[in-house]
Picture 1: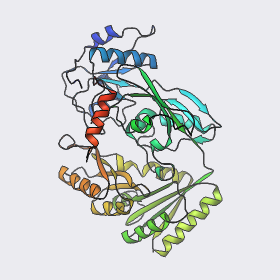
Picture 2: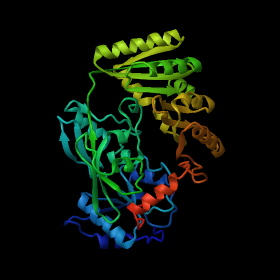
Picture 3: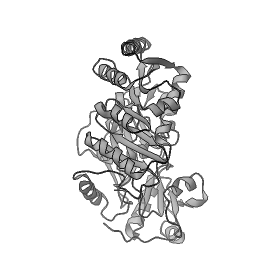
Picture 4: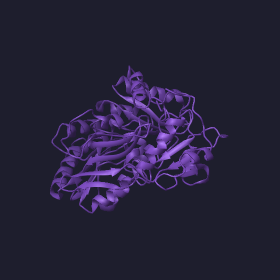
Length: 429
């Protein structure tokens, strides 16, 4: 893999790609433009070498630009709107940023089949607004939902509490198109729910962080909008919360979200005292009323406090509750055995929200936490069949952010080389 890149000047780039389909390629000095100035500066790239933001208007323009980068060894950093640009491993160098924000069309919407194909630069917010007109939605609830693009959500495998009912991003992704380093487009999957032919590149690109290529289109399965929604917040002592968790998990109840909340998170939102277990029921009104009543009855047996949230109060809760878990100086994504999730929240003081069924969630720590303390949290996760990824921290350059174990890293580097042999895409591994 090539590591001796040339850093071109603005004039050199413009000469190579002056006119693509009679249309000039938009090349901007990122440090002069908001919000890019704030977002890209989070990477703390050394100054002194010019940095540019490339915003192609079409896939053809992106393809030809990538071909130029491949030919002249220009290093590029793919992104959408840059809302999660500082997540993961910081790149050793990144001087050309390529945004897909203008690739934002609806390619196909099969209303009866409950599938949609969109370009990767479309924001999730705009997609949900479009689908709502057909009484449908895509059950993905990522960080920064206002600005997150479809490509960025896939590349970071980022979703939230709806994982309980609908699974993660890769469970909803039916097909994908992407640009290779040489500018050629490749496709995998299809536009039907039962398509199983071929190698599963959808899963490979989910969480790839731009290492393998630039995602250009994605096809998802959709769901009808629920008739109604209701949330039950349960708070109390650790052992009682754990008994409630086990009882509901073994029952026939079907919440669309079921998350454990740390003491700090419960306290910061004035939701009660102790730990929290939050349930969201969505669907037919009568069904969600019955299920929420069952949760309240079970909680009462364990001497736990409950509160019901509906309508705008419920929407505000689900908008504000996750914020403290992915906004702050130290943010981690964790996975752990569901049976040990509550112990994780108890052992380390943090703002934490962890999905009950899969044990995946986010932790946000006080800004005075040290790197060795984070390594202790990681050790606890790995000892319980899990992981800890450091998404953001002032000390991220000092320790390995991914926490790879076994043969995972060598295997991923091999895949990276096979997809991007000339190393056009900045290595985030």
